[in-house]
Image (tube, rainbow, N blue to C red; front, side, top):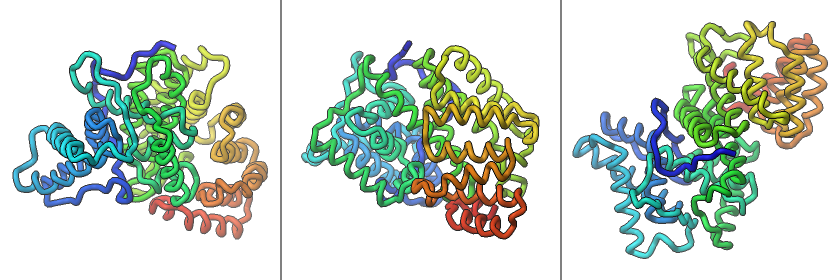
Length: 431
């Protein structure tokens, strides 16, 4: 594995940045004063939250304390910027303010007591923190500690570093919010109790942490691809951040097939963005999308990456297989021309390396497209007893579509109502 460490060095030009907004239960967002100060604070929150936390963590060596200081800095910005104007460099103002607040807390003895230790390795050149994108990726690798269970390290990183609300993290793992909150609490408690050293991993440790890091980036993209709430279908900030991190990983690990598979998957999924809603802002399913609105440059890049790295490995992993499925859809001139048997075969391979209920449901939908609604219904109904899918709205939605195609209109209507009741986003519910 050829790897360049995510420490100092040049930035990646032309890439958007910005974490998702944390929730009110953990790190609440700032109040919004009158424009333009309020707009500037909100924009900085979306764009700079993770980089401010990462910069302060290098001082506090404590992730919770860094989040507290960053939150205070954003709170101060609400009033200070309204009274004195928005600074020329909001990120620098926020970082300086957060560091000062963190140092004040350290001097008062509040910061390094019963907190999540983040023993960040000092910069060897003594030049201070690197570019924001390096700080964010460093923090993701740092938090994906192998002493925690795989799901716990991914969930904790999504919550603390990416700033996803606990409810959104729970939805990604198909568990109730209370269950996820308890898991996060247990993970933090384990870190405190065992004194797990949270430091930037060495070169030799990067490979063992990579699967969790890839899962974090993938799930961040999933969270942004269809937002759980709000007027817009896509959280463009979360999607852009996931894509930026994937590109940076591809630069750091140029020979890792799964890294490039993930980048290809993100490119191919985001290529449909403009066609996913119509002129009235309503949801449009993949089969009905205007494919002339798809981003052909992103599709070309994603399919080229997929082909290149499929040819290099005899045993593709989950992300490369997911990218191959997305490429089949992207290259079809229309829904009817999609090579559905090929999609089913790829899902069969994916289930062998990623036997998840969501993957099984996606395969069942593909079976319905390849072999008819009755075959699809049999595959979907076989998943009906899986507790992980009990509250997942796409299960009854898939069943409703197949029932409608099979002419069982009354059952389809009931299944659509069930899906609408479970959907959290207004666009999906209306559809």
